[in-house]
Figure 1 (cartoon, one colour):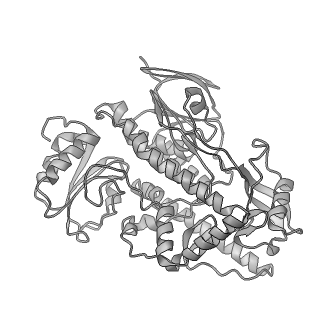
Figure 2 (figure 1 turned 90 degrees about the vertical axis):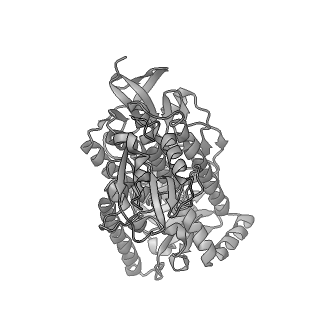
Length: 519
């Protein structure tokens, strides 16, 4: 049956664009439907975690992220300078930002930087302050360069799925595709029409986040503040405000957030009567509705990002979780479309990503519990704050927030198996990330004995083979890196006698049978 595209992606935000880029990199024709006509500039997540930075690094986009971060640091400096000039109490800058948990800031000078979990990302570990809108702009430019058919101003209105594909109906006509992926947000049309269950916990809060022009800001505290009526945050960008009130979910979600609404909420929570908001540059409402679909796939329809899981936005985990979904799904769906995917490959998407999503839901629920303006939560918050005054606790929280502890449960007992591949530096000065720009899997032979590469000789273009050496890791014999950057196999030198058989099993598990039967 004729298909207009192999894959239709509903939703052209960062998750949908990331997925489309990964598919296009593998040569899969993809159409992205996005109802908005321009990049969404609404204030949302303000930072990315280490796995997200690694993903962009491995595709050659780290310099662009670093440039965005430099501009963001300039805005932070402007906020601190304006606050001082307004006569407010001086703000003592943190030694190094290490994240926050429920607004409890982690001190970078207490971080145990020697922890082995931090020894891996390479230059990607230095990039984090990148806002969601900037990420979307970069991804849109990349998608365009890769030939993605991005149809802005187009809304998915329905679809009919069968065993061979999906007939997608849009506000501008219909098209036939082999697969449909819903990346269309927390109120996903794809999820609803496909009938995915969406269990979870009901919302308890009304949150508002905005960039505004205001006066009276010198009377506000900077950073995260807890009061008898809620929580608010002021900074670190000029005019950036966030309020959280524990009086149930917002009655209205669709209408624009007005200056009057923001001002009233800020006054209620902060207790500062003379703060005035004169203009709203961008604003949004949010809540802590926490839900997740049990399975990210139903036949020819899949979900990624907020379409598969929703939760409170504290810590910006949602954006990063969605980018991880897209990276994990992209190469697996591409292999399925192009043929040769081993049995169960696409099902491993849910198996690997669902546990991480469930963790994020509980991580954000815990933060909401700590923020409640009542005595029990206040007492617990003081305990957590005291704990984060120690190196052990700061390192624990920072590893969770940054994502460096993420691991998939893969077969094999090497410490690297299932984890993000370390950014090895080779003797010629290149790094591992330099070898992953094209989205191919990579098999490294770091000993030169020939057996490692021989086992993958029959996989052709499915796997890039590289024989090199890594002076910084002399004990590492070889590494099999999936297209998403996950280590599928690793061995030390000298290794156990069965490590070669483990490599063969990993090759077949993730990339199917070899073309010529060599492996």
